[in-house]
Length: 76
Image 1: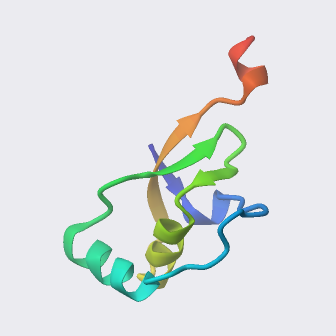
Image 2: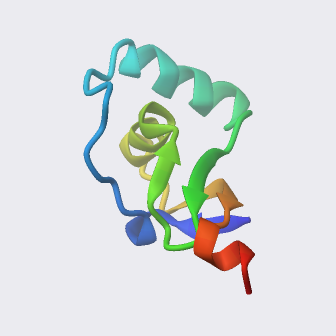
Image 3: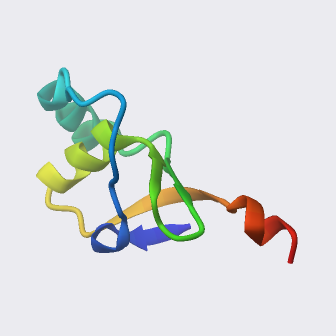
């Protein structure tokens, strides 16, 4: 699915450093986003902070994401 970057909520992260972000940004610019970020059904970022930040640096307003439902969503 494609989602607006502005909709994604980034909470507390375990890994806080964005190492090699410049190189990742250049790579995404050249070949595109190969692996989508992961979000839950409330648009909380699960993984892909570096990819998200690289796409922001490229000026993207939307990003491909894979959604994983919250546990309470599975009971519905």
